[in-house]
Image (cartoon, rainbow, N blue to C red; front, side, top):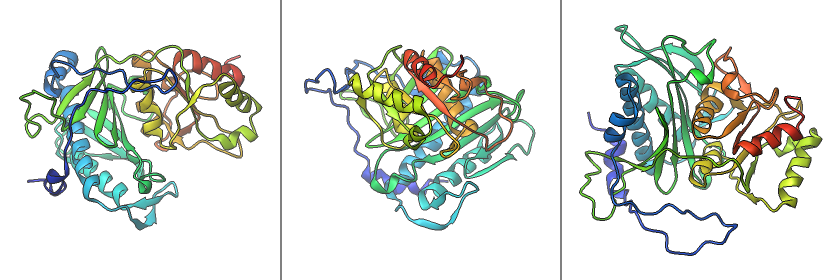
Length: 356
């Protein structure tokens, strides 16, 4: 059955690869990514970098739905549906469409056992014939507060094995995670056996014979590394600085030392940047007046797996330990978070008096 969103969006897609030609200043952090002579496709990379065939299959299933969401976003208006989810957030048309596409993907998948959505925080059985292997948790479209401004938004997906399921497990037990960023183009980060890889949707490199209709994903970055130091900062939940002197002092440190501010208010673009700039720190401490909003299963754990696989560090914002070691006791469990370049996360812990 053909995808109506994909069919309607075909005429609107015009992706191209161009080598950056403008010189960058030392503080602008323009891309240094250079054009390659050859780009591997998703199946080629999975064959060599993902040993478990069942994990390969779930990744392919999830990448397909990210493509479907891309096509849906190209033609869908951003309108309020007149309802809220279980967290009190207004549901937008694009939220519901993205969520429906993910549930449909779970039903069709031969390897997905259970599913849980940030829009409806409960675990559902998707495995009628008993062959499913994975529990998949997702935030279908992070960035509802900025999508009407046509800013980049994203999808976050964590995948746990049948042996652990979700409840009682930790983020470190994920078999993979997938983070999609929908902007001028769609790019996706995937955790594979030997690191983090980025794939771009629908791109046709100059001189390539790749047919994007047959192989829509090409690998544009491989074994991404996040540097230990950073001069980029993304300070979330600044309201909490009124209650946390340590956070106020940390923000002052960034400004005094001339760090570059990069913050959109969208968790996906603000953290994804760490993989394209190879540095960065995202801070989201909490206080009694400014409580935690990030969900462990849907947001913190999937991104945390990618960041630590790329050589970065995470902090749960309470003990100073890795967010990947937080036991998931409820589907909607929330957490404070700091993640990114190792030395910047350690600095966060120090300023907020964590792990002392």
